[in-house]
Image (cartoon, rainbow, N blue to C red):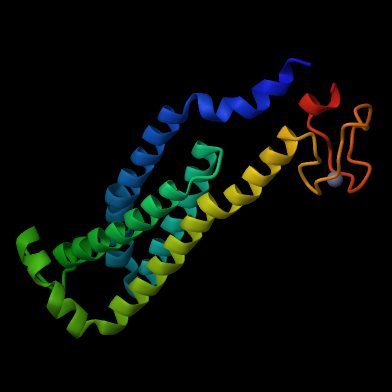
Length: 190
Ligand SMILES: [Zn+2]
């Protein structure tokens, strides 16, 4: 009876906390994530840049859990974080790759144009994996969000969250008579 409101409002209540969480994730992905990928590239070469893809996938899953609801802004923020992470990773590699012999960060950053010209294949591969990772992160946070907001709207109007069947006359059911979707406990008592 009174559980009805709780299911829908809890995501909004700590929205600012979620926003902070999303920012922390973004910063961690761009910095620590970038450094970890740089280490992987340093160790495994082109194969190591696969970690840029993995980083995006993991970041997307974690961000989606933290947000608990759709957020396009966070999704775009993660895309930016993945791209920054790739820059950090490659710069890290240029700084620590034994074959390049750079001794400081300035030299490593200044090496960027040469890197793209000399290691074009590696740069393209890294860019590709970064793109895969960023895309995965984006959809993890944004797409399932669209489905969720539709379900929330349906619940609000007393419809089955899955198929939209009118549940007003089905209050004693455990599942939607139309599609079999389990009816959220909060709706059953209407
Ligand atoms: Zn249904």
